[in-house]
Length: 286
Ligand code: ADP
Ligand code: ZN
Image (tube, rainbow, N blue to C red; front, top):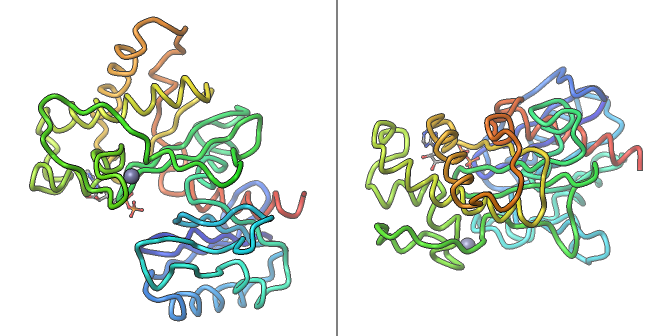
């Protein structure tokens, strides 16, 4: 059995499962302050015997094992979690290998193992929720270099009819600043879910997301793009995004069938936790 943690800004999901990605037990705890949340996490794993634990975490996080603060959540706006050494804390309690990566990298791994990108050696998983992030599987491994990718903070062209300044505290009008859930909410002064029937909202959203996808395709050439997160629950976005991706690329590269290329998660809301299980498995197999 392996253990998995999906560490999110609003909740922590803990699970125990096997090497095929089947989840046997699962629990959720609200993300409050580290002492409180981690106490719940630790007592969950004390009830199970696992041979490794995988953590998919909100971030930014330090994933480079050569760096002194490897295994920490670094500069999160959730201040009590900034510089929190989550891997060390788990290691102190459980003497097993610990895999550690971003929540979106974990989700990409999960989707490529048993989800919408099953059987493919490359894919991209994008979440459009409170923030925007993406994880990439390339040649069967997670893409990582100096650090992990932060694909939500790329720059995009502004929609000619969009005066909204953007929500990103670092860049204002980067992709996340213009297209994550909170940007939709502030621009249109209503929650995304209440804007379901407003065509102009989703046209503009697709305008931004398609630009990002064009760039990810041109740089990484993934074999499939899986889009999840709260905002993508607006299913009408999928055809709009596909259409704008085709328009933007304008015939320059040969395109796969977009209907099966840009898709919702096969694992639904379980992509991240399943991927965290795979992080644990990979850590043992390393
Ligand atoms: P998180 O990113 O915190 O893990 P979510 O992926 O659920 O959580 O993203 C939350 C964001 O998505 C919020 O800004 C919320 O308004 C938006 N959102 C959630 N559900 C929907 C929906 N059905 N339609 C449109 N927007 C949604
Ligand atoms: Zn940004």
